[in-house]
Image 1: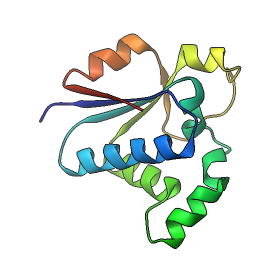
Image 2: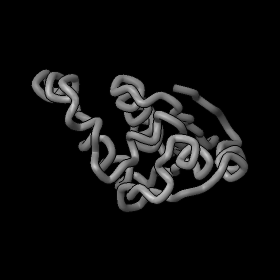
Image 3: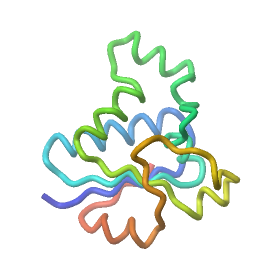
Image 4: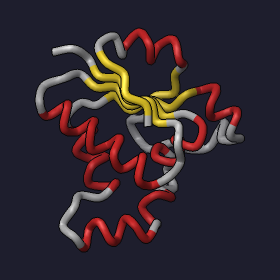
Length: 122
């Protein structure tokens, strides 16, 4: 199957959540997936887990929908590559800020090389 690249540029919960929904669904179907976060999207990759504290997260879980934590764990189990943009980290003032375990710091060229099949931007 063709690789899927997901570019997450927004720091909002809805886009981050759906980036993980798409990533886990594609990986479950056997597609290689790279989720590349930059700029505000880096919030998804921060070790402090700020998106998990948002009210929308609790509402989703109360409705029986997998939340960010569950989807991120599933993504890692399914082999989704979680990448944080090096330049985006610097631009957001996050250089040196701890990322979640398993997150690779890389650049746009590496992402575009990995995402040779299809690209989705959120």
